[in-house]
Length: 107
Image (cartoon, rainbow, N blue to C red; front, top):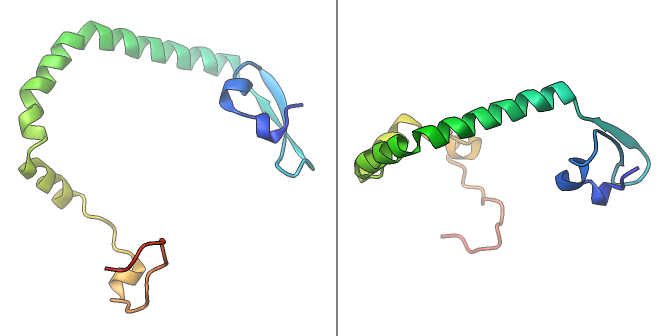
């Protein structure tokens, strides 16, 4: 059994199956690795890396050619216009209630 404090990904990755205690030490969880899923995910990762390596020069050149446009003020302005921030309830109500303190001073 692996104590909760020691249940880090780098430790659990060494096991196909492990019992891990909860923070209070009153219960355990059984973590099981699915070997078929691991093989599928590893195959996908290797395929992606091979493709990236194969196309590296092409992708580098495309990025260099487009970098001035995609990092321009106009491109960022368009990105924010197309993807507005969600309106929070306190913004919608025009709340005069003070915001939760974050340790700084209000502006």
